Image (cartoon, rainbow, N blue to C red; front, side, top):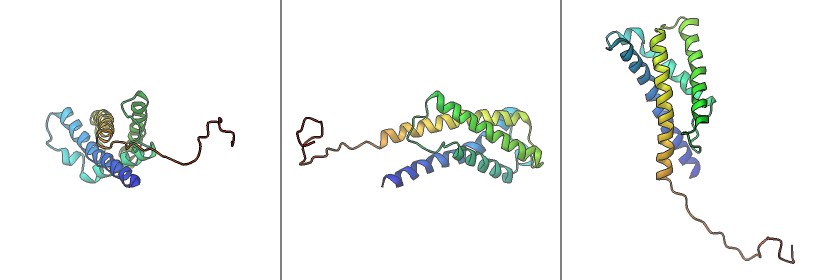
Length: 155
């Protein structure tokens, strides 16, 4: 049962990431130009799908889908920052190396900053949510043997 719960938690984080990445590019485009006119021409849905898969794969390799640790720490922020940096290099290769739908640097930088903030907040929120929802059970193990403290003559 604990294994099922772990996968459900990781799936929740994954669903959040699937929503965050495309949203960040839409928000970056809006912040850069002030409207969304022409967004579909600049960033087709196929490229958004490839970018989202790239970010998810990099997040997986950086082990960002484990919810056992607290994400509201400097170490977690740095780990998320470096994972986004690696993903940005991969996306840049897709954009400019393979000439797949190049977008402006301004949108790209804004979108990665938005991803950094929202991914950090999302993971911290999920950690706090599951800490609140899943309570640990108290357990007492009672046995018939004597304690193994070293005071017993049999040990």
